[in-house]
Amino acid sequence: MNKNWHLPREATAILFVIALFLGIGIINPMFLSVQNILLCFNSSVIYTVVAIGIAFVIISGEIDVSVGATLGMTAAVCGTFVRDGNAGMGIVAAVSVGLMIGVVNGFGVTVLRIPSIIMTLGMFGIVRGLIYVYTDGKWIENIPIAYKAFAQAKAIGGLTWFYLVALLMMATAHLIMTTTHRGRYFIAVGDNAGGATLLGIPVAGTKMAAFVLCSAAASIGGILYVSRVGFITPIAGTGYEMKVIAACVLGGISLTGGVGSLIGATVGAAIMASISRILVFLGFPSDYDNTITGILLIVIVVADSLLQSRSAEKLRKERLAARTNGMATSSGEAVR
Image: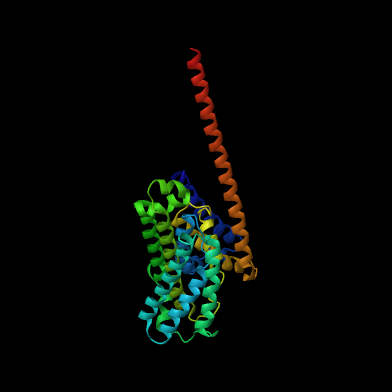
């Protein structure tokens, strides 16, 4: 069932972004300029990286709403080291913090059996509070120009090196998830955790790995945030959790788990990053950004739920028909 759905869901996401861009281009032709399209993709780099991480969690049947806080915390940690002239140590420290948050989330969900929405919501509050403690409620500024210049460095065709690296991350993670046994564990666990256990798949270990990968990706997002934005406030990363979850859902990943791919998450991230620019080209204030994101998330989740219900009902009828035919055949043989 999953194999049948992967390609159509990804294709739908790609067709949607093409249709969306063309539709906006008809209304305002300037939107379709090469420079603007490249800007839409380049500006989606942080969403893309974080969406890749949280996709592992969602596909495995869980959720992580602490990614925005994790991004903010790791950005603050990285920013202080970079500001003080030690970028290398800042990157190591940021990733280390992200990994620790992921381990705590995974431990709470897999060992303490806390529902992931509750565990990560609690971690969201804890990490948000720690950001204020760490920064003393102040902005982290004076990031060296050389470090900020990395975010603007162009590679092939006007795409930034940051975005190309994000695409490389996606391609690598996608290959691991689809071509290796351990990578397929995430899909199997999300599709049917009980069945995966019977097959000998380490469900708890797989979910732990998903949370660790998610927080590690969020920490990389925090490192990129420092370079792209150039300063860090105590509320850095706010709202990213909704954006990346919406990106995954828009890219065809089911919130019930077991369905979707990282390619779809990457396409969804590009759409999420483009909403604010689309609003500007349509003449609306970008204040509607979060409102539209929320509407998209609700609509897609409802549509996905209806499709799954219809699919489940179809399978139920097929099983019932098969059993009925089997019983009729058995009765006919008994009469003869």
